[in-house]
Length: 242
Figure (cartoon, rainbow, N blue to C red):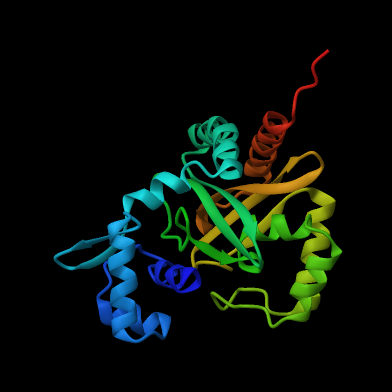
């Protein structure tokens, strides 16, 4: 029953609603009677809310999600540096973590005159198609890299890297430079620079700056991104007490 309830909640990706009963049943491959019973129970506990135009995810999920320890502490440490980077560039800033073979965005500051991007807070994209994702993948260890390279690589645009050899070379360059670059691999007309964020020697997140391709100047922007990511890493490092 718990697994089916989660299927129902997961059906609300990526917008959170509205969904009709038939939509939920179809997405979850459940009979409409079962979907209706689960939606009713979830509504009673506040995980789902029902309005005139359909079902939505409930506010209680937002309340719980906002106190997940890793993301809460990460956002608390990262936001000052993200705002500094935004004030210096007025471009879109992302903060993301890895979940399986995807990057999940935990914070986003949208820039002025920003290109339309597929990223949203709480949304996920393939590791291999985004700057944040590639930065995380490059520092996630050889086992995960081998797993990704052994699978068919997902494509979001005609510029997404789908050749394993080319991706392997790109990850090596990221490891050498400490920066990941992405040009129109997630969204046509967009580009970004990303850097990993470390905690106790492990890459736990990555920070990126996204710009329209016409304003993509890596030499000018990369040092600011790297400095911001380093600042977050230092903020996450436990301070030794004497």
